[in-house]
Structures are given as structure tokens and as C-alpha cells.
Image (cartoon, rainbow, N blue to C red; front, side):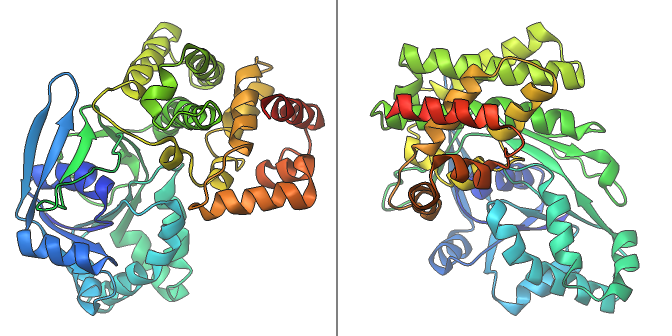
Length: 382
């Protein structure tokens, strides 16, 4: 199976790239970081440090790399069996042009071999969003051909991959936790579904997407935002504070009640899932900065993301939401001088006031009582 993977960063190498390599794929990474690409193409291998109670070092071998701006990338897409991404939600639109050119060449060559594209991003139905960006750059007359021969497969991904202080002689090494989850919508594949260990198939993806979004992502973000407020540097240090742990756990339980109502999850099993995630946050082998996890607060405060979407679910089902509100208020306090969204959010609050900023960030204009509760909690946290 010939695969081209967009994004040669830590997540790309340590998670999806590793699973694809383990499946004996003919794997090529593509990225705009030329130094990284040169190193990957030179070594054609790297080490993955899996850390937890049972740690191991696993080697990924026989990989290739090419710059995303190299015209050969388009040729790779034209002949590939699968395209995967781990570039970040905001970059999907930027790579859509290259993917569209590759698909256009594929169409021109009348390559009718199925191509399946899977965006492995921390977002809801990222591949469907990528599909819209790609189709917008393709002639309308090719859309029918694309629908017939190109599958756009949504997925849910879950693995904590913090930045690693790599040794100078091994800049490609990456550290990951032992837990990983890659769930894909089996109904969206074109042609035969490939067998990849670690890739789980489902016909009810949204249940798993929201389970992860409302639990891991919600809890991770709130831990980061409260952690910064309390003066902690890492997620582990923050979650080991009993006050933060209590709020984070309660917020995850509030969002969990939404999932139980919406998808019929077993309450006891979901509580076990929450406890498992909290133990992952406290993994002593992972040094994950609260500033990294908290970055891009504007995206994380948007209506479809990890804080507001579960809050809206509590309103839909008339459920408690006190701790989610505390997490949202903490997010509005997030400050990071190296994160453009943090700077933009701070300026928005200063220019338009907290209430209006919340409206513009979260789309909660129809819920003034909730906005007032967030504002009150924000003031208490000053």
C-alpha cells in the first residue's frame, strides 16, 4: 500500500506514521520543514519512545520524505493508495490545493484505483472539511469522478504526543504515551478497506468523536487553563493538584452525562474511561506544558469544539454545567505571548469587553444567563 502522509511532526511520526509503517506501507512523509524532510530522507528511520508503566523504544524504518512544495508530491498523490494528514486543523485548507492538484492529475491519467484520504486531526469530521476545501479547488465537471474513485474517511484520533527534548544526535526521536486510539468511519471508504493494526472501524463515528472531544479534549484543555492560573508548568503537575483534579473530573462527568443521554453510553464504563484519561494526564513520563495544551484558545472556545459544544449539550438535556463554566472562564484567562490566538483573544476582551468577546468567540448570544455565569466566574478567577 502506497501512502503519503502530510505532516512529519511529532504526531505524524509518533502516531499515524508509525501505525502505517508497522502495516508495511510504502510510506512517504511530506512537510514544508526542509530541515526535517532532509533528515528523514537521509536516515529513512527514527525511534519512537513509548512511555508508561512498561516503556519501550520502537524503530520505524524504510520511510521516505519530500517537501510539500515539491511538484513530485502531486505525482505521489496521483499514484497513492492512501493519503493521511496530521498537520493541525488550521492547516487543512492550506494543503487542500496540493491535494486537489494531485487528484486532478489522477483524474487526467484516469487512474481508477481507489484513493482514500484520512485527516487525522484533533477536530470533528476533519476529513469532510478537507473534502470541501479540495472540491472548491477542482473543476465542477470532475466532482463526479472524485465521488466515484476518492474516499474521504473521517476519523477520531487519540494519543498524547508532547514535544521531546531530543538528543542532538537524534532529532527525529519522538515520545508517545502507550495509549492510542484511531477510529475511522468504515462507511466512507472507496474500495477495499486496508488492514492496519491500531486502526479501528466503526459505522457510528460521531459517538466516538464526541466521546473523545468531550472527555480527553475537554479535560486536557481545562487542566491546562486551570494549571496556568494556579502557576503550574506541566499537565502532570496541574492534575496532581487536588483542587484542579476535582474541577476537571467534575467537568468531564458533566460532559459525560451529555454523551450518555445522546448515545446511550454505559454510565459505569464511561466513568472508567474518565478515570483512565485522568491517569494519562498524570503520566510521570510525559512532560507536557500547559502552554502547549492551552494554545489556540479561540479555536477551543468555538461552538463546535471541546468547551462550548459539551456546554451546549448540557443546555439541550438540562444537565448541570457548573464545572464546564469554570473551565471556559479559565480559558478566557489564558495568556501565551508565543500564541497568536491568545494575543488576539486578549485584545478582543480588552477592546469589546468580556461579554461581547464571549459572544463572538462562542456563539452563545442566545444564552445570556450562561454568559453572565461565565463572566462572574471569570471575575472570581482574577
